[in-house]
Image (tube, rainbow over all chains, first blue to last red; front, top):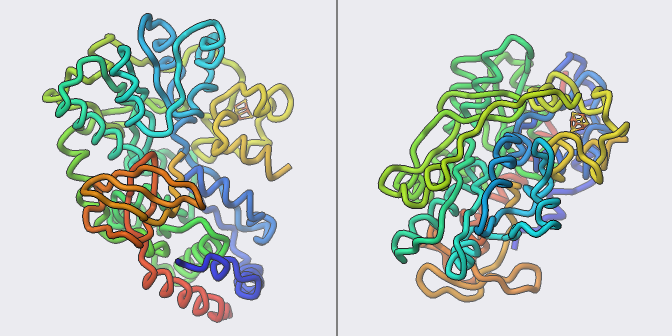
Length: 353
Length: 74
Ligand code: SF4
């Protein structure tokens, strides 16, 4: 097995850090993926960097970008088991979370794998809440394929799938934010391959590194980005080649393409992004919960004071939200960025206070 | 949520199998990694093996770390 201690070698870490400390250009790097946000907090990476390098969190937590109207719609369902990943339970809807609703009797089950939802449907009508990025999507698509093969009638999936590259493009197309580089998501890239990000340097002149989650993975990635800036050569580099390759996992892509098709998607706090999600193909429409229960999503209304929208776009960091720690904390999240342990606000709350 | 964890394959029968996840056995599907063999390490996520972890490439990354650490900024 791979010796992970080598990815945490203090001597090498020190060397890279000393070197990075010499970097004096103001540099904004976005870590797209919530697991990177967690790893950066966990390893204390921010404290190792010079003040002029800022790491800002992007929209890479699938739970955080799930619209509250989806929760509101799910709460209306009757006589059906709602199966979902654990984090989703605490996402605030307009008035209630799935967790609260479960306490008053709604049949909500936490599953680790979509395959468990398939089993649940053999007892009772079951809807699986399909939240996830490219990492999670193939497993859910395969589950739909299996439901069809097994001729199941009591199973459906709500497709709340999101795609990372179109969201990055949408971010770069707004004038709100200037970025100098991306820490690209490791496990999303296992499926889509490092070539999926070529547009970033080619069209926007910004480089990025597909990185793993160990301290040397992240620090080396940052170092590579500073080198790219220094030589004015933005490019996509794959630092995480122990699991990520250029073209991604073709078998997984095939299952996705068989079952799902590209659609516009609603991102909480950001709005509709063209072609940034996946819907279920007509051939599998009997498993499409959006059709079966006639669920449509709509944009946020009202104002809770939550600044997740700005956090997800990297415009502010969580402590700049007036509610951070003051009314909003992981036990009582006001916005979705505080819900999932991978949300930027939750990660800041845990590690950076 | 996209976190995937390394697990070692201990049993494999077609598309299904068992992995050792830090001492705990878990069922896994090899739909996306049909070429995986017993003894391989895979990256596991929501019950599926997303890819085989390459030891060779991991060693290359370690070399990259050394190179990058030695690369002086001037
Ligand atoms: S601290 Fe809470 S209210 Fe403020 S942006 Fe984060 S989740 Fe929203």
